[in-house]
Length: 255
Image 1 (cartoon, rainbow, N blue to C red):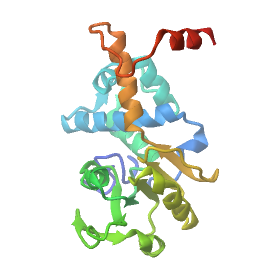
Image 2 (image 1 turned 180 degrees about the vertical axis):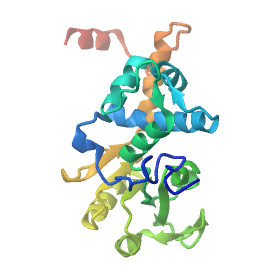
Image 3 (image 1 turned 180 degrees about the horizontal axis):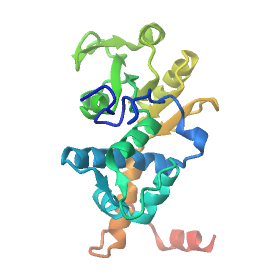
């Protein structure tokens, strides 16, 4: 790989050999969150396609490989100023470069994980972080039995030392995998330390200043959405786990 080539994950220099601008927030372009969420899917798909030696691809082929419809894909890529070439399609390498630039995979993002229970430990061990530019720089937990242990080569520090750890490691993103009761306090401390991007796995709503980017992952909610769609298939009838009497139903439907 020559210096002028982009990294396989979309990072590095641009295809013309110039420095790649990786610090431009996609939000400044007004790209919808739903589109931003699909861009990594397109990039992963393009990486696989590039490994197979494909140099150009049509919107229909890329959409099929990524699991979306072609109209949605074209609309998503139009936010990047990418429309492809009629009769030819998209240049795979250049499209990887464009998407990688927009989602920040051109640079390394230091991440801190707070809460090293089962979920936090699983997240810390996730190999996909490294391939997408995310580097675990610190792990924190209040459990004395865990402090000092290493996960992926990173020692678990005492949560009481959060401020010192943040000052030393300068994380750009924090991942919360703590109990709901502790989440707001930990969030307040992270924000006070200057952390502006937080991914929350705790089953609770958090209050943050307007300048903080907070994303919530609610596994229970996602399962409920799947349960709803499963119920709509009509393949089976599931008895409700909560017994509701007739008068309660009548009151609910009347309101």
